Length: 264
Image 1: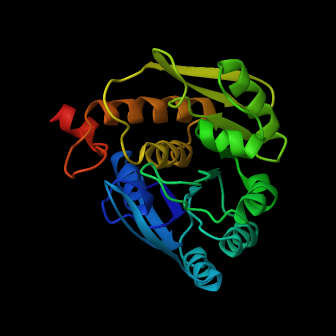
Image 2: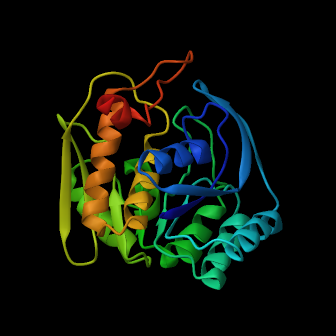
């Protein structure tokens, strides 16, 4: 069985963070393993507080896992602090972790910083060069590229700028851009590939970025090419959005197991 690793913070609502990553892995038939970077106090209504772990505790978790289980793909999410970003980057190298998908989690959907401001530079210059692919949304891509993004042409320029920071490829998710289509863009250093889907009505859902990057990592763990894994992730998140759940008083959550429910 293919195995994927998520390195991320917790989310008590189950809609984002490592809980959502593990659900997404399971939905794709991939065995999920996890390393906790932070404990958050949050719900569907937003983040109340977050408590990053000491960086050496994150490293110890990775070291223990790496000495026991061979993983087929790796996904990073909320890292919290510059020290954790540095520790994760170092462990990716020392453990030779494969097919690294970096979800540059900077803020929560409901508001609140999930990465310390001084850690953004560390992420750009220490972690991204180890990534197979980095998956920012538009606001995150603006921060990483230093470019205001209003159009698809802006997205393409931002992808080129981010790719020059070192990742093999960049996927910028288009959910924040205006228009009837939500267009995700993959740039691998040579070609630009667009992945459009009709924009769905309703309020933004919690955890779409986590689900997309985890689904992409699952596809890579299963041996898919990067374009195929991106297409699968796009289709999965679109379906999970279409079947979104309202179980709290804030943002709706994705139905991570919508495909199995449709088949039953």
